[in-house]
Image (cartoon, rainbow, N blue to C red; front, side):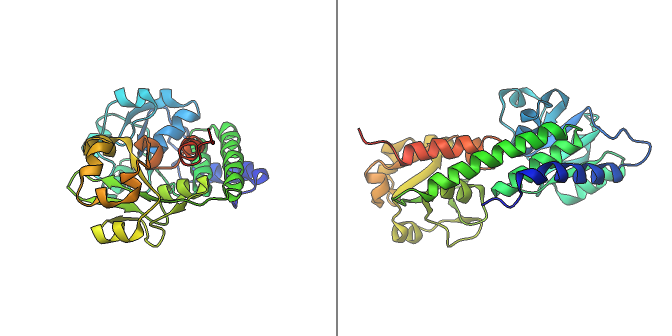
Length: 290
């Protein structure tokens, strides 16, 4: 269950706001008007708070909402440059933890542009925490408290439904990295949380984080379902081509068309749309009897 009681979310927002204010120099405007967001989940939170009009640029992982696609891009979140960021004249950068390189963000800070890091959103608690941090930076923490409480309530209901599922099918996530290797997602990943909150079992729960897959691992696990981002399935040429794959074609989940897909923006990072992602995946896993 989530560890942040609803009644404490407002208090958390006030605490974070105090910390934000205390870290600003006296001559700076506390609340930003020209933001660069780094990391798809961070961008989604800013827009969900109704503050998308303040975003002047994003990174290439920020693909939702649609407006984020047409904003200037500062590059991939882990390959940023000082010049690329500062040339756009931001008054604040809000970045997902792991963005960088670290020395780039440190150099940005020395110019007087504040950088706020949001913990990687891999658990439901972290979603709420991320919402509160971002809303506090934007002086919108009342709305942030409400949004955080709504997400928390939705996820708790979904977890209760998941606990009541009689069948517990196993699901193996596959991701094409574009280098000819397939990856899967173990514990401490957004994928693991989404799978568990449907009531299913992550077939790769014995692993930590994202790991490359061996053919032996896939065949030995023999999951009930395969889960892929829609883009990975498209890159593979569709289900028919998966069946022709010398390794994947041996899996019962593939040969029997037990393939699950979701948009990658829903799968690869938790955020305001995580309850929707869980609902969509659960509807594929637990279809009502005809």
